[in-house]
Length: 278
Image (cartoon, rainbow, N blue to C red):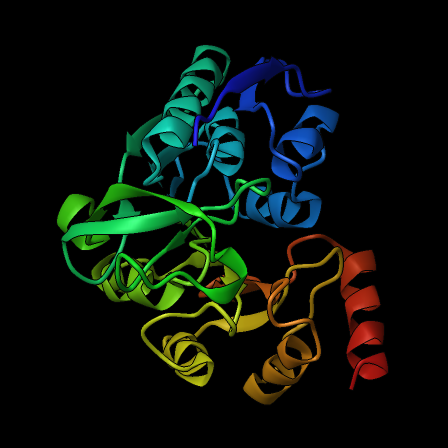
C-alpha cells in the first residue's frame, strides 16, 4: 500500500499539518481542526509548560503536536514508517512555533523488543493492528496489506516521570503498558487516555487491563466532554454494549491529580450522566 500525504492547515493551530491523502477518518477531521476534541481537551487540561508526555500510537502526531505547542516534552511512538515520517514533520513544525520539543520513536510499544508485522487498514489509517503471527489477520482485516515493524519496550528507551500518557495502539494496549511499567509507576501525578477495545485486545482479557490500571490507583471513566469515575463492571458493560468490531470506548484516567479538570459545569454534567447511565 502506497501511503501518500497531503498538507492541510487546521483552523486555529497556526501551522500546516501533513495527513494521509486517502484517510477517511483522521485526515478530514484534522483538516477541520477537530480531531479527538474531548480527548485533546482532557490532555491539555493536565499539562503545563515543561511537562513530559508519552504518546504511544502517535499516528500522524495530532496529540504530540498539541503537547509540543503547549510547551511540553513529548516522546511519541509510531511503528509504520510512512506514517511516522508525517508525525516527524508535524512535530518539527510545532517545535518552530511552540516552546516544547518532541522525540519520535519509529517503533511500536510492546512487552518485549523485536520485530513484528502490522496490518494496514485500507481507509481508516488510524486502525493499523500488530499481528500475533504473519498470517493471523483479524477477520475484519482479512485482505489488509502488511509491513514489518520494530517493537520496543518503552522502559528500554525512555524513563519517567511523565505528566500524561496517551495509549492508542489498536488492541496492543496491554502489551504496551507491560513494557512501560517503570515509566508509569515512576509518574505519581499522571493523566491517561487509553483506547479500550475488548474485540482487538491482545495478550490479556479486558478485565485484566482494567485491574492493572485500578491497582495502580487510577480513577477511570469515558473520555467525554463530562467524564465521571466508573467502576470496572460499568466500563465493561458500556464497552460490551457497542458493536465489538467497530470499536470500544476511549478511557480517561487520573492518578495523584484531579480527575475533574474541565471545570464545574462539566463536573456537574458528569454527575448527571453518572446517574442517568447507571
